[in-house]
Length: 191
View 1: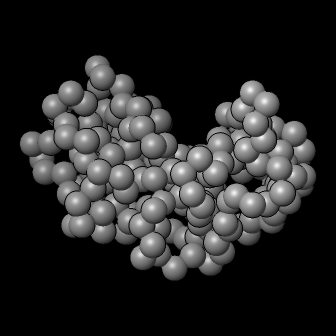
View 2: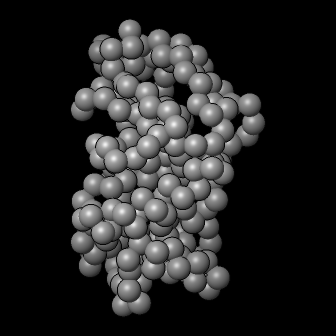
View 3: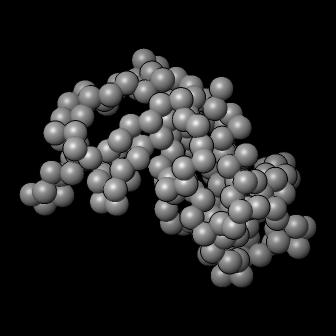
């Protein structure tokens, strides 16, 4: 379980999140919803240790995290398969695992060796999704992972990312409302 106790985050002098206390379960799908600019991404970054905050974020055990950010953040000199494998070690075994994951999100054999500048926005998003599940982390943090995807690819990516919700905690920020979260927390107006 992840416990947030009196967490506050501000930019310059503007309070974005004020005194938030919240318990997140060990497994399941948790969604954070709210208006643009309400602090959803900021809260995810604090959970990942990428944003300073006041208060406490604790867990009852040591956790590993993996994430899909709003930007795909692919390494331009690596192929699609290598970008997925790069979170481990780029070797033959991990390249095969990466290709399998990419196949699950609609990549064809000819797409595995494409460089990021040869990928569409939607393809880059699918590479980022496959990369996030390459490591079997305890917590999967997803910040708008479906942006830029058409309906078929969205379904494939959602299947890949959300399939392990009974085994791990998945924290999702999305404007697509067809998911059935185990817990939804509205960000904003939490003063």
